[in-house]
Image 1 (cartoon, rainbow, N blue to C red):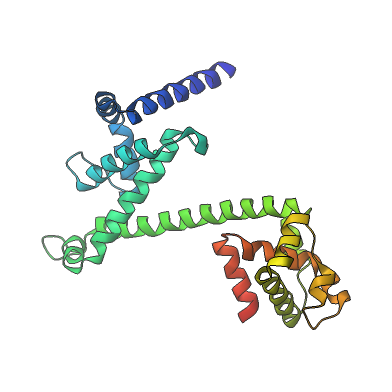
Image 2 (cartoon, rainbow, N blue to C red):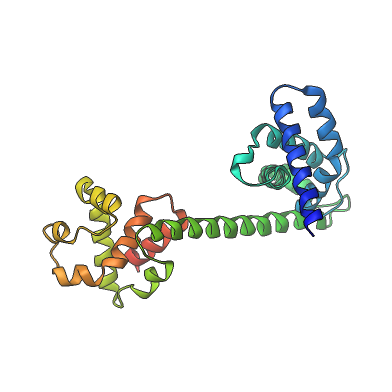
Length: 247
């Protein structure tokens, strides 16, 4: 088992070394690397298109360009391997291409119908593949966002469950807590106290809102959890807050 892990590690380091040389201007090595990874590119593109891809296909050309882009943009510091990074880039570029094609009505009609005017199943398979992959990407992004949020909560000694378990039971109370969190983020002094001292400035907040100190204390964890969302780049979690306000 250790032997296999060591071999995989050596291959990864060797590939990273190759990419570094390419990024430094070795064109010959770039061409050789792209050539050797054509089967990988074809397989990745085929997984999106859900059909066998030939090198003469436009989608394969998109995949080649995307793989070349991945080589230029790859950095070991990002954590993922080159192949994992390249797979993501290739899939995204192919999906972008298929989406752009489907938006052109004249092209869409040609693809959707075969020579006899019947529905072309490949076209609808491509559309379904795009939708499935977009759902997969959205799920991955949502999970990444939650993991990042959890790490921010831990800085305050909180957990993701605190957002749920300490959520006020009544809708009006939830809205009130969200509004306090928003007020907190709009006040530079209170915001600095929260993120510097990692505590809710209850006394200062009490003087700015028309609720009792007891109410603020009771919703302390929830207010902090919401404030963290408002302060960060949390696209999906902010939808949750919108739901609380509009609900």
